[in-house]
Amino acid sequence: MSADSPKTFYLEVFGCQMNVHDSEKVVGTLLAQGYRQVPTVEEAGLILYNTCSIRDKAEQKVFHRLADYKKLQKQGKRFGVLGCVAQQEGEKIFERAPHVSLVCGSASYRNLPQMLVQLQAGKQRITGLDGRETDECFETEFTARTNPHRGYLTIIEGCDKFCAYCVVPFTRGKERSRTSDSVLAEARQMADLGYTEVQLLGQNVNSYRDPSGKKTFAELLAAVGELFGIRRVRFTTSHPRDFGRDIIQAIDSVSTLCDHVHLPVQSGSDRILDVMQRLYTREQYLERVAWMKAAKREISITSDMIVGFPGETEADFEQTLSLLDEVLFDSIFCFKYSPRPNTPSLQLEDAIPDEEKSRRLIVLQEKQREIQRRTYQRHMGHTLEVMVEGRNEARGQWIGRTSQNKTLNFTAPQAAVPEVGSYIPVVTTGCFPNSLLGEMVI
Ligand code: 5AD
Ligand code: SF4
Image 1 (cartoon, rainbow, N blue to C red):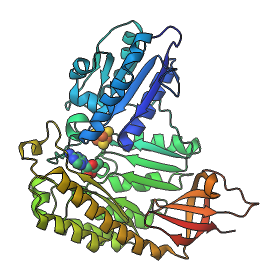
Image 2 (cartoon, helix red, strand yellow):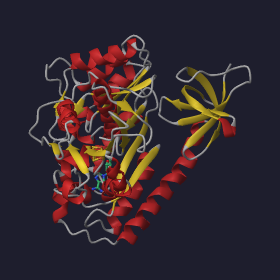
Image 3 (cartoon, rainbow, N blue to C red):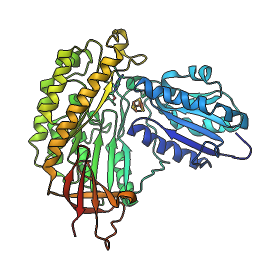
Image 4 (tube, rainbow, N blue to C red):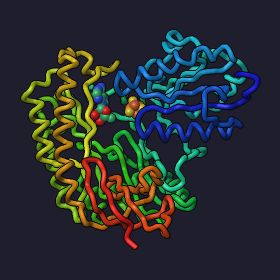
């Protein structure tokens, strides 16, 4: 490590909320080891990338970054690759980017302190690559959460589903749930520290199985929601196959559980769902949607979709389009299919041209945009509680987030200065396809 920047690190994170939260744990671990976090690569002795490999584009980002900063190696800086690309590519990273000294997947973060000692001692190629077989969860002793009001909390790691397109079972290992006691202790600790919103995380959060057998996922949700000081509980990402009615019942009976469910469907075609090995049919998905629509509070439903999966015909794609009309999602994330290493669908020919994937992506996004343009009108004139997230000075607006996870930008009277992290009522006066506009209610 460079002599003028002893034990300083820069960390950039790519990918999902799990990765963002893992980064908070990594930062906490490094701080506990006497490192100091710095905001630029130039100031850092150790440069870390916490990577994502869900799609090829995400994976390429880390190699671009490593190439961009290779020259800094001459100044004695060290480089580390963490996360899903690290787990997937392993020691091959040393060949591709010889200036990297550390390659570590998420299941091995508990060994980071020892690895850092080796790094300090000048060791060149350090690896932490525990695979699917590991039973360990990365303990959260040193988590350095970045937001003081809203915090992530991992309840289950890994994935045993093996959807045909998905790299996650290979990068994050097998499913491991924490005990409900351990989750509740951490949630209580967060509440004591002043957190009012907890976001429970897992690749398949609702596949949670309490190793102590005390609580189901729905019971755990309710228990977190009932903790003193907690005003909002979110959970992501749910898998339709394990999505039971008891989750809706918990949302119905515990008002702090947010009225929002992210339930990735991926495709509206039964044929494609089957090849994707998603383990549910369109009808079963719609049954879960019907449960949500019958809930006491209106539940906002959002989803992920993949276009251009091998063999997806125009008729299959039409099925996905018609699902949008049937469900009326509040938002969707759409992706072009990207073949990933190790995954079952790698055996299928990726024959749909990129232009056709792009076309389907645009058609899907535009259709959804039109739906949101129409359906967000339902919020007009309603008073919604928002958590204040910040201020947009240029527009003279405050930024708020509703329980349904929608952005509600609002104005406040001059005398009122809403505090970031506080909850206030806002009446909706305008609707856009992706956000709402309103005025603070006094
Ligand atoms: N290609 C395209 N999209 C993918 N996703 C996961 N794997 C792939 C892939 N190989 C999408 C899914 C998932 C979201 C996080 O990323 O829609 O829900
Ligand atoms: Fe990316 Fe998936 Fe890893 Fe998250 S778990 S960082 S989405 S590959």
